Length: 125
Length: 264
Image (cartoon, rainbow over all chains, first blue to last red; front, side, top):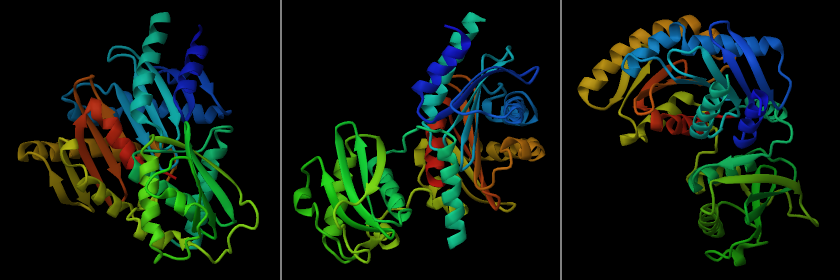
């Protein structure tokens, strides 16, 4: 099963997940994407920019104080129209998983399922 | 909520649905939350419709028109006198059947957490459009806030949300303008939370525009560390904001509960 199929499976399993993407935070690039609808490149670029900010950048650094000094493994941005879940493979790795979901998505499930998906992808990498 | 804001909210919701074609519309949550979702569906329905709610083998349908609940049309569970309510028009909020219907629906909605919604034209001649309980009096009679009602007054919704957290949070801090207006948790933890919040807000305000991609309205951020570590939920409603300390295990559920109050 290739990475796209793994992401497809994640979307099929998580209700309200419109997009799942595997990204590299160092280069701010989407490496692979699975989506129910077509997303413009600018939108994908914005997702990786936000991922880098909340998992690696100044916002993430500000959040470390809440996490006993450790890096965030998961970050979520929420608005009335959607939620975006950002998961990193490990503190030492730059790979991340991004999920774009409905505003009332089951966030605990997105995080749990996304974490296992990312682990599965990293084993293949 | 004026007519334009209702229209804008509706359009935003429709755009959200349009972005995921084929996705079934659903309500999620505990029975009280689901009942609020039912009231919201009524509030958004102008034309005469029969709206059905289904969870696996359990379902019920209601007749709705002109943003009024007109009658229970069908229920698959015989519960709490449901049979005598089916097909009986509810003329106004004073009708005793309204309270009985609340009990029936809460009982039925207890069958599951995820309910799909379908809508179709009312069969036959339906009910006269002036018959029924408008969504506002209905919400008051049933003691529910329509889902997403927090959009109208997010600051009040935030204060209410925090007040309901109790021991589900380790500590929280409510800030209105530049003043701390509320707090919960051990003094030492709350004091540290204030210091950490000041550090966090520097980075947050410098990147706020890219975090939410131009979306307006109440926004939130969650950060979680190791599996058994600490986590934080930050909510920004412009005039007021809050920091909620929790654990990695619980924070996603807390965040979802907040979203249930403001999601379109």
